[in-house]
Each structure stands twice: as structure tokens, then as C-alpha cells.
Length: 134
Image 1 (cartoon, helix red, strand yellow):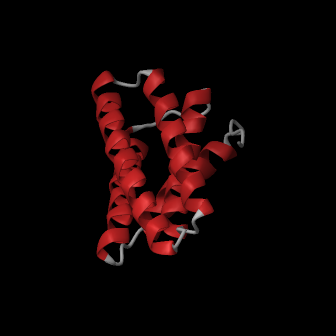
Image 2: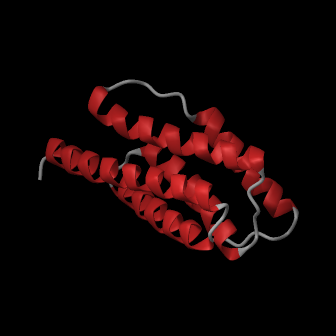
């Protein structure tokens, strides 16, 4: 397959996944922490991470990875999302959507600050000695 076909397929599938992730996150926000939503978010983001990694879309891969790591730790009970970390995660999901859309538009998206914030959430968790890795 040629690269443009891979790009079109990835864009279509990742856009669909991003919409689902956003909907699930909105449900999580309304449910006040239902554990099922953390598990589904982890699975969706982990799959998106793997797909982006396979096709060498580094920015999408790294954002999806840090988000899936956060939801993995929450799912295990090793991390509690306080208001600040919940809002940072919400912003991360928004930026992930912008990165996916940029595949179509070619726009440059600034994402590293947000990714670093989410990495700090995981580092703080690791300092407490709770973290497990995938």
C-alpha cells in the first residue's frame, strides 16, 4: 500500500477513536469516576498508541502513550485524578484530537507542554512508589 492510503486509513480510524475517547471521557466526568470508563479509555488509547507507533506518527503516539499510562495507573488503583490532573488529562485528550486533525490539515500543534504535565502526574505517582509499568 502506498503511504497516502495508510495516512487516509489511519486518519479515519484515529478520528473515530478520538470521538469515542472524548465521549467516554465525558461519561467519566459525569459519572464521577466509574472504574469501567478508566478501563475502556486505557484500551482505546493503548490501541491508538500502537497504531500511531506502527505508522511512525510520533506526536500522536507519544500523547496516546502518556494518556494510556495515566488511565492504566488509575485502573490499577495506583493513581487518583485530582482536579488539576483531571483537567490536564482532559486537555491532553483535546490536544490528541488536534494532533489527529493535523494529519488532514497539516497544521503544527503545540503539545509538548501538555504532554510534560501529564508525565509529571505519572512521575509524582512513581515517587509515591505505587506505579507499575505496562
